[in-house]
Length: 69
Image 1 (cartoon, helix red, strand yellow):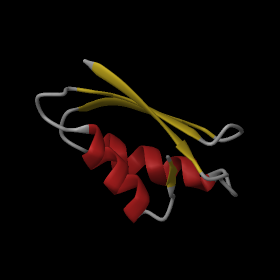
Image 2 (image 1 turned 30 degrees about the vertical axis):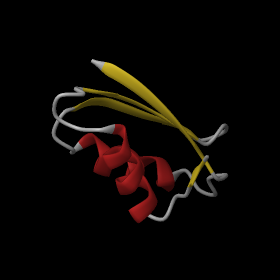
Image 3 (image 1 turned 90 degrees about the horizontal axis):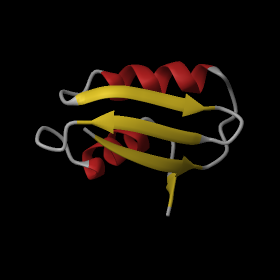
Image 4 (image 1 turned 120 degrees about the vertical axis):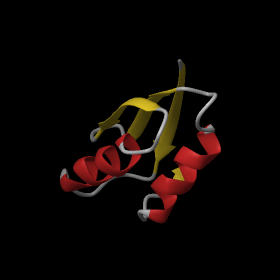
């Protein structure tokens, strides 16, 4: 398993957490996803043989949460 962390632009509502965790958590190969509201960070544990971190980033950004470089 591999871990990746993304820094997001500041989150504005706690419901953002459920939205991101729900969508990313359903991706094949993702074992765990955790969003920290106060720091606007996403941590995902995933199987690198099934999914790439770029795919996770794309899903997060398509939900409307820009990832800070």
